[in-house]
Amino acid sequence: MRQHFDKTVVQELVKEWLKWSTWLFISMLTIRAIFWIFDAGGENTGVIDHFAYFMNDAGDIFMLIVGILTVYTFLRYYTEHGLTRRTYFIGGVVASLLTTAGIGIITFLLTFVEKGVLSMVGMSYPTYVEPQSAGYWIGFILMFLVTSWFYYLLGWFIGHAFYRYNWLVGMLATGISLILLFIEGIVTGETVMVFGLTLEVLSQSVIVSVLILTLISVVLAGVNYRLVKDIRVKMK
Amino acid sequence: MENKIEIQNVSLKYGKKQSLENISTVLEPGKMYGLIGRNGAGKTSLLSLIASYKTPTSGTITYDGEELFEHPRYRKRVHFGYDRVYKDEVIEKASKYYKAVNKHRPYFDKTYAEELIKKFNIDLNQSLSKYSSGMVSAFHVMLGLANRTPVTIFDEVYLGLDAPSREMFYEELLKEHERSDRTFILSTHLVSEMEHLFDHVLLIDRGKLIVDEDYETFTSRGMKVIGDHEAVDAFTADKKVLHVETLGGTKAATIYGELSEKEWAAAQSKDLELDPISLQQLFTYLTKEEA
Image: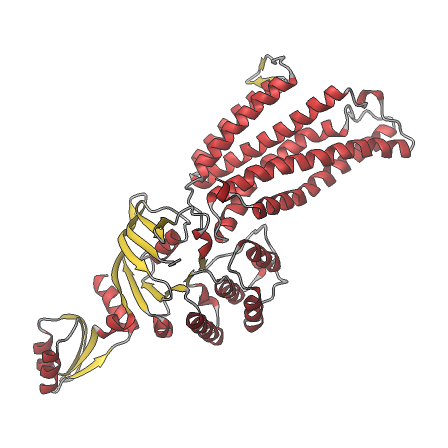
């Protein structure tokens, strides 16, 4: 495996994805600013939590899209440059972890920047968005990273299934992904609705949630490797 | 390091369609191979297998005795240039793609690349998707030559080049061939224009490798016998006749196979003219015959 690790691939992927993420941050900051402006005007805009919480779902969706796009943009690209599928896979895994961390760091910095900017313009951070304890933050950061990585692997899985097989298998993979998303929802303590039925939320600790989600992600990474190890690279 | 590729009993199937059937050959270093065949014969399929774009249904491809597919070191020694369409690329700018090649290819020669960029007038500031077909071809040619990979495959990438540029490409190829031990595999339809480059001919027809010989030996097997109708008929009676033309009492038959000294003498005694034929003609007749 070590022979297939390529630092350049990791650097290239992280750089490219973080570049893509600027659009995510620009969009989210704009929406957030609009929310605050309306909030200052006395309207109830739903600014109910800190910026990192606000970014959480958008960051996950971003990583899901990154996973799908990576198959169609980088698989052939690396094959053209004489790199192996395993190099592409290892590069993708490592780079997605680093990108997730990168987005996480930027998000948390922006959370504090937001607070600073609000106080500069004379707006106080409402009590309901005030950060909580250190334990809360550690748990939040861990969940942020693990769910983002899980979404990347899910997107990668859908992308590989569509690329390797036909649309039917691709749709099947999408269906499996939806089931995995329900499981992720249950594990992370969200209320999950399936066909009108509300699934009971498990009340385990954050650490247990992180561990379960990490385990699912590792299995998902294994499935991705199986899909890509002898995949036919399309020339057109 | 030999840089020798061995292809053993390779077959490739797409569903029920047999694209390649039991192909075996050895690609020796320092040789210029001409891979010829009609459209859909299986040329690109074979080349994409060598370049590890896919795995064969059966058979093996080895590089210096080790399996080439997914080999972290040997994969970098093979360059595969084909008629690639750049569309919706992430690496959109040609200059960026060029920089990436420089990073990933261990043998990439930047000085040589810059020389070729000037020679072929390649604009690296443009987007790859906005390149004309001629510019795409020139870009591929530059990459293939400057990559300096021990095994370099050009699968009709030069078709978009105009005649003077193609001539420049052939000159560069010959120079590179002379000063290095690189193996070149050139797949083409432009047989007549490129045959002077080939050391060895690989002819694929309907997924089968029907010719695997050095250029001289192969082309010497083709011969045009011209003379009196009956004399030509008598001389070619036990030979493989590929093509026949008649004009009045004169007949010209293209035969395939080796001629013994005795047969040469017999042809002379019957006033028959024996003319060599080109690779293009041989290719046309051999593959047309099977159609």
